[in-house]
Every structure is written in structure tokens, then in C-alpha cells.
Length: 447
Image (cartoon, rainbow, N blue to C red; front, top):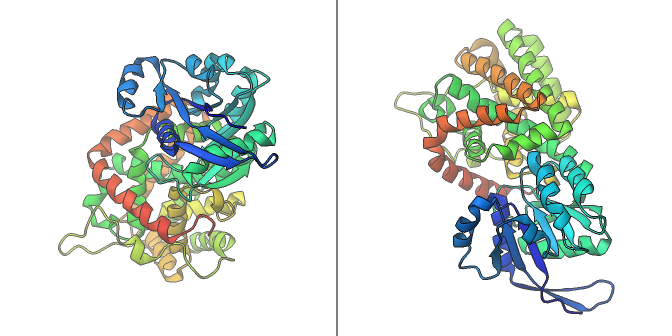
């Protein structure tokens, strides 16, 4: 049985949609064996794509040199001729987009989505797609600039025969990713566990720096080691699109709960710092640390030599590095402890950012001397006190924004901070990419 005209359709040509289109097109011809009949099935990936109609001419020019990528003006034209259709649009608009183009879906096609939150995606598919359409979704757990090789790629069988799932998996084999099969609910719980608080921490750090009118790379307080991770990944998030993070935070019910707890943890720890209650702070932090890290093997995810390589700032003459209170890290472990989350349970589905953040947090908590230095600084040294105050305000502000489900406010807050740091993004992105590349080579997602 040979099929030489299997067509992949992509609706939404943002950064991830474009990455998928290019990867699939570059795969060319692919041969695989049908497990039931043993007959070779040959598929030629002809990729059809569309985005907003006003971008039609721009996209046509962009893909003019790729003969097996055909750009159409709208999703109706893609849906009616494609055998596997991937919606690569923001989670907050997935319902209206599927409502518009879903009825045009080719009979017997397979449909999926690439959103970071599957609850609204699956609801939209069930509501608007014809009954004869199979639903098999996916999610690459990394950004468009990260090499997908070895990275987690979730495949979700929602309403489909096994043959449709196998076909989607074979189509995506060209990514060389690590395939993980989950339900939509499992996906949302895991992405909340591995991403929600991580994003909240970085968003709050950027907000605090901007509120204090600081460019941290110009200050010796944020040079080297853990500070490199904080700075590079904060800028990496703010140099991305706001909707990448808004959909996960606002539409994922598990994420809302975690972001709220993170803000509560930040506030509780900061109050202990203000009170100068060293005994209570130490007891709470070390109890949380024992719950999260107490049964880990001795090897660390990250070594200090790796952390120190990637700095976009440097100590000036006669400048000495100041111990940091690391409220951001203390609170994330407190949050995991309060919610009963083990961050290692879902490493198979973790993003590069999460593995970096977990590695930096582990680096602090599993070195008693460093943790004691941090707790002493939190109580006795007020160097970071104004930063911690603004960070507490920021964490609570982001939590309120998410709890209200306010996309417009989220976007305004995000883009205001992004504009503040924008001049430094090119350098920070370059350093951040090198950091992620190096650390991904030294850590494994299943560690």
C-alpha cells in the first residue's frame, strides 16, 4: 500500500508553527513499516500552511524557495485538503480558530494542536470538529530556537485509533525527540509542575529589577554562578512572546494554584526576613529542602564550573561579590514542599528552562555551607532587601493577574518589562543559548 500524497497542514505560522513546517518539509520522503500488515507505507510530506490572511504575501515570499511548503490564504483551504492538521496557535484563541476552520476538516483526517495547555484545546476539538475526525495532539516541550533532538515531545491520543497515533508518531520521528505518551489531563498537570512556578519566578525577577530601575548585569551583585542562570533565563523569557507564557498560566487550573502558592511562599519567607526571625526562617527553609532534596543521589544536576561560564556582567575593580538572600530560590522549594510536588518526578517531560532552574536551586540547597550563607544574608545583610521587597510585590502581582484570568493585563505587564530590557536581548539570548546548549549536553531529561 503506497500513499504518495499524504499532506500535513499547519494552521498558525508563528515561531513554533514555522519550526514544525521546516522540520517536516526537510524530512522529505520517509519510509516506515506498518506494524499490522508489514507493508511499506511511503509518505511524502507536502506541508500546507497558513496564518492570518494579512500575512499571506509575506509568508509566500518567506517560503518561496521551499517547493514542498505551500502557503494558503486561510485555514479553510488547509483543512479541506490536509490529512494531518496541526493547530499551532495561542491557547486563549484556540476555540475561536477551531470554530472557524474546524468544519472544513477533510473527512477522516487527524487533527492535533501544539498549545501548552490542553484543556481548552481538547474542548475546542470536541466542540467544533466533525465526528469522523481523529484527535491526536502533541507538544514539543522546548522553544523554537532549541534543537528538538532528545527533547521531550508529548503525544496525546484523545479520540483516535492506535493506527492514527502511530502515524503521527512516524510523522514526527524526524524531530529525533524523546516521545512521551500522556493524556490531556496528565499533560496539563505535568506542565504546571515543571513550568508554572518557573515562569512566575523569572517574570517576577524581571519586574523587580525594572521597578528598581536596575540593569543587573551592571552590578556585581548579580555576577557568576546562580546569578548567571537567573539573569540569562529571565531575559530569555522576556525576549519571547507574551502569549507563550500567558496561556499556560491562565488557562491551566493546576498552574493557577501553583503560582498562587509561590506568591504566598515568597510573602511568608520575606516576612520572616523582615522580622529577623532567623530560627523560624532556617527551620522552614531546611524542612522544605529536606522534603524536596532529602532522598537525592549525591551527584548534582549542575556544577559550579558550568554555572560560572555564562555571564553577561563582570565584577568591577575593587568590587566584591555579595552573598544573595536568594528569595526566589528559597520560595520555589517552599512552594514545592507546600504543594507536595517532587520536581524530579516529571523530568522526562521537563523543559530546558526547568532543568536549568532546578539545577540552580538544587545547587543552593544541597550545599549546606552555601545555604547557611544565604540564610544569614537574608536576615542580617540588607543589600538585597529592596530587591526582595519589589520581588515580593511582583510575585503577588503576577499571581493576581493570573487568578483574574486577565490576558490584557498579563500582556501589558509582560511587554512593559520586555521593552525595558530589550536593548540587551541580543547578547543575553546568545549567551543564554550557549548556556542551554552546554547544560543539555551535561544533563539528561530523565536524570
